[in-house]
Image (cartoon, rainbow, N blue to C red; front, side, top):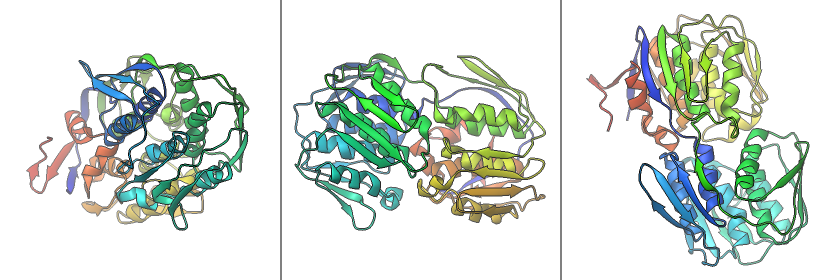
Length: 434
């Protein structure tokens, strides 16, 4: 579906932000590894639903209680099904590969869409070095991934950390299942380290302690087992809040965002608050709400997004309206997300007349308005590109292809965006959210 986003004069209102996709996925997967858990207010996005279904594939019973509360009871004695389908969730795929090996294998992991192009070579090679039978698509170890029945041994493990933190999180989740001391040494330039910390924190809530030596070495001692998360409320998603905050910073606005902002469960995308402040945005934030009155005169600058590559699309849109040159650096790993978030993003922004250059791991953006209005922008099936383009539309008017891809992380995005004052249309008719 093509969504037309028309320019508006202001945004105002109150919105309850959706739950964190990353913590929702980690909560369901960890809950399936041992004990009993009650997960409160998880995300209902496609990836979180797949994580919930994957918990069942791992043997857990999953039952919905009242008010979006989910009861999960692990049963590690159950055999894996012969096929597990993870749709387009790269996180679930990567977490599941070593967990399936540790649980006895004998399964094939399949997916669809953008997941077909996402590589798993570093993870698969590491597991094969541990004795596993893991075979994916030739050249990338992508889907479908066949998991044989050979066990893997604990010990001293090494993996390249320069492509994706999901590989590291996947191995950390698996090590407590191997029955002896293990260490995990990361080589290369480590990216998205904050996501590893998120995994370690959820493991700790379930009774498994991971010791870290800096950000490149981790230790899991024997004798630990997953005991369940108890009762856990999933915090609001900082990365999804970023789109609304950016919109409010660009336009006259008076907005309040409510949610659960848990300082004990920090998020990689929580960097957005510091990034916005550095660009000249002011807001007030508590553990229950964020308030903002825009617009602001934005400042460009040099911003490292090494640990928060999901912020590349929305930071690029903000840079279009900032004073001076903006450099988004340390983002080479953003090329292997749902899209190539460097080349694909640049390609689309060039359509509106933006001054955007790319290097291997940077985007350099200079303000070049007035921008061309009404362009059809293709998010390349990347939910974060789609939402960033919708924010851009509030300023100049654009059409966004395949807006339904936002269901991957934020199924209610069009509805919530409209509730704040966004003007959304299908053809000539105003958009009616389902």
